[in-house]
Image (cartoon, rainbow, N blue to C red):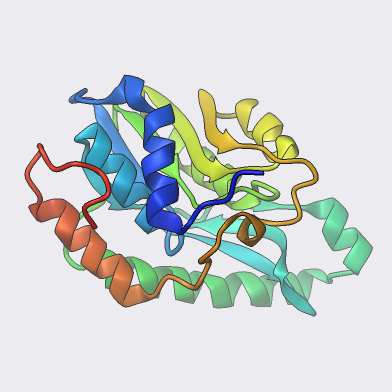
Length: 223
């Protein structure tokens, strides 16, 4: 079964699946930080498209933060998995606490990554939203729903690896879902990477800075 060496190699391979968007002046690549940024960097380089970030925070379960009970975007839009919340018996008071905490972290990251740069105007553009993998798709779902309010021409979801279930759910709300592999059983995103070490804030900032300074002719893989 296909495995990726790291997120950069995964981004190069994902870009090949998105080659039809190369060189178009109406395409913008938005990466979900942190892990989606190295992938998005390579995609944007290959497509000669601008790169930016769209900060979305997973809402983790009280006793297991890795288990998503929803996701939150910077515009105050959130998606909740009510079924999982019911199974875990998460009270509304605790949900409000989780949302408040993640809102503060979302705002911190947005300031850190973007600084004084405004969010790009995506009106009428094809927006390719990139992450390093899609397990449940909850985080990507809230990203798509938030971006819809900014009136893009299309929203295309893209990831190197995704579960079959996540792809099916996202195709219902996005204009397309592109991935390199959809293995079954899925196990988890990290299972399909040799190096799935955490992407740091410094790496995110460095890659965004490189993306703004590189010439349009740069080739993918030059991280």
